[in-house]
Amino acid sequence: MGATQRMASAGSSGAPWRLGWPVWSRMLKDAWRDSGEDNLGLIAAGVAFYGFLSLVPALSATLLLYGLFASPEMLGDALLSLSKHLPAEAAKVVGDQIASLVAAPSAGKSWGAAMALGLAIYGATKGVDGLVTALTIAYDLQESRNWLHRTATILALTSGAVIFVVVSLAAVSALNLPAALLPVAFDTAWLLAIAGSALLLATGTLAAAALFRFAPPPPIRQFCWLSPGAMFAALGWFAVTSGFAWYAANFGNYSATWGALAGIVVLLTWLYLCAFILLLGAELNAQLDAVTRGTASSEKDK
Image (cartoon, rainbow, N blue to C red; front, side):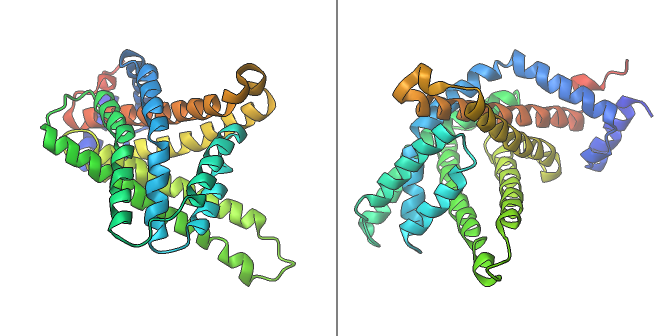
């Protein structure tokens, strides 16, 4: 069976995993080529910039929502534990902001807190708006939604992201419970590290799949055709984050070059790398979308 027949069979059966490695290899090459044609590097820089501007409102919204059910200090500890996966300079910037937000006076469980939460979510929409535009370009689509539909989608995605982060942080906090139940002599550090990494990969895959499903305009996409790009983005994010943290700690002397701005530069660079990997996953899914339509550039037999 040639590449064209394999792709047509997989597209008609709804099983992208039936594609052979030669087809996958060709689609990966096409996704990389299209990333250059779509200027994903420049677009990812824009997403990183808007994501940076949305960082404080997003953290504030997360703290406010989590504070309705538990102590903000508990959330601060969970966020700080997650920030350890970032490069040291970026983790310090995020950690300082978390500490500042936790120390700020609480609005309490009132309409004032609800208004503050709404304003924080609205402030975080700028980053999501840029991401929606970037994913639309990565999927080679034209924006077909009217202003109201697009705005509602962005608000829903932002609110969903905040809720998703709160639930994920609660799960991260729950990982510390086994350590209190097990004997003192039992070393749980490695177990918690593995469980935490697995949880990050799983939640990252789900988050990427949700973005690929709802952020770009129609057509509607089935989950099985979203999962390859989502898994690629999650694994790529984990690898890029670990690799960049190692590079920044051992070779990148950012403090000598940027001084007090080193943390901001490292954080922006990390956001850029994460955005690029996410958009590259979207390019891969765009190739899979083309498979279902029988128009993939990679289906030509050579």
